[in-house]
Length: 166
Image 1 (cartoon, rainbow, N blue to C red):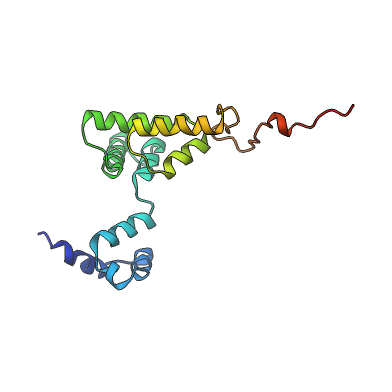
Image 2 (cartoon, rainbow, N blue to C red):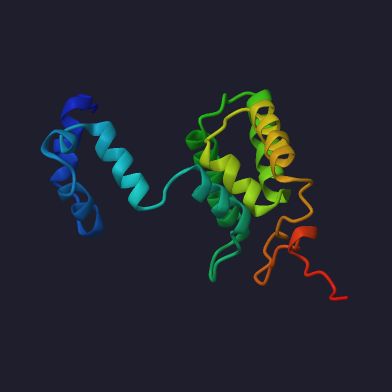
């Protein structure tokens, strides 16, 4: 039984609880009646986006009492949601773009990853062109932090190294 989209937000508002009610109450009256706006606000508040399902897919482990069959079902669900929310074409080429893009993000320095993700670039071609431009503007990349390094300190440039006193 399908409800018209313009009535769905009002129907949802009658069953929301806890954090979801708080999200709903912070929307303007007009926004709270718009299904797409409400859905987007709820997904954002619960961190249910492509990146979160990517993390869940990559970092899931067998839960206590869970069978491997159940784990595979859960992983499959995470992968499907990651693909759906990433906005890619659901084709071989689309999946290739998604996997290559995520691998690039995984291996590039954190500063570059943040730069690229902030721009919400979609294709590998555009992402690599922007990455190359960033590295050209910021240097060779040797001064970037290593992935996961907590105590990273940038290497000083020649201008920052104190000269010996004569």
